[in-house]
Amino acid sequence: MGLLRAGLCPGLTQDVVQLLRGRGIRTVVDLVSADLEEVAQKCGLSYKAGALQRIQVVRAYDIFQMLDALQDLRSTVAQRVSGSSGTVKVVVVDSVTAVVSPLLGGQQREGLALMMQLAQELKTLARDLGLAVVVTNHMTRERDSGKLKPALGRSWSFVPSTRILLDTGEGAGASGSQRTACLIKSPRLPTGFQETVDIGTWGTLKQSPALQGHPT
Image (cartoon, rainbow, N blue to C red):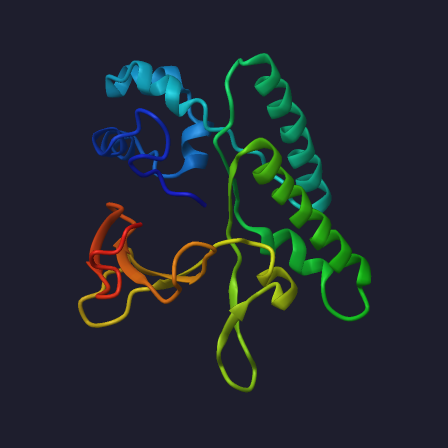
């Protein structure tokens, strides 16, 4: 579930985030479920409420619903591009594991085929329509070695062009909102760079030595 943070969409500044949190609106789902006209009046927002309203949430409880939603989105975005009436910038799938993992395991060959069909649909959105596609995937540990691995296995690891491992902060001074983001796959940057961020404020707490002075 995505937390509201500054920069998520035009007009969503840190001040606006704090105003919304004061009204009990902390996540994207809370926001799209609220009466934005009422929220705008109570929080003293104007055009910013319109910007927030452009965030749309589609609930998909299995892979077939997700494929239908993505195909509908592709058709809608293609029409908007040709009509120059506005464009979608980012698509977030949270999480792909929830709809794919029930299909995998044993002799379920159809599950792997459906997973790759979903991967192709996401790549089509990114490549043909110029959208940023962000996908969350759970992590599991190998039974023998205990090493972390993507929950959807090796096949899915080749799908994303960039992979970031988000882990909980460790150490005595780490708070519950701290996360360590580590770049583990990238077509442009060397891997292994990591930063500690606070998702409560979405600020960088500590930059790794390898990142200092390196363009991002």
